Length: 115
Image (cartoon, rainbow, N blue to C red; front, top):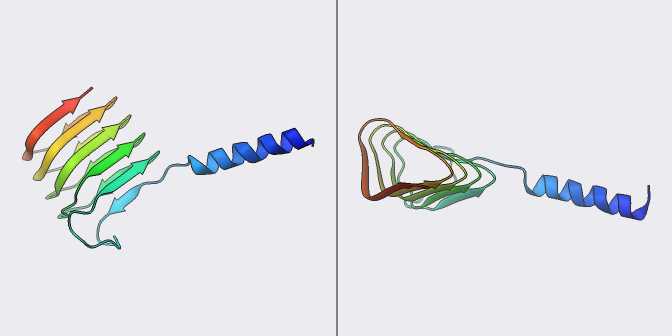
């Protein structure tokens, strides 16, 4: 292998590893137990389990899933969907290039938008 082929292979490996997605789970096993913490993910999603109170949630190229009885500040997704279960309260809810699906008793204090 030549030097340029090794460089190309190393670059492709580095890019693959750096852009691999992950999902952030906010729940009982969450080490950040403070209320109103912000969570964001790039190339991955954000899952919030039942009965949590969080700050801002954001995801680029991933979905946001919010389970029952959650309170959140601003919830924003770009190139991803937002799925909301029952009895959820948020200030703002927006997505670009995605859908918003909600169950019953969704309370939005300010704005809901999809672009």
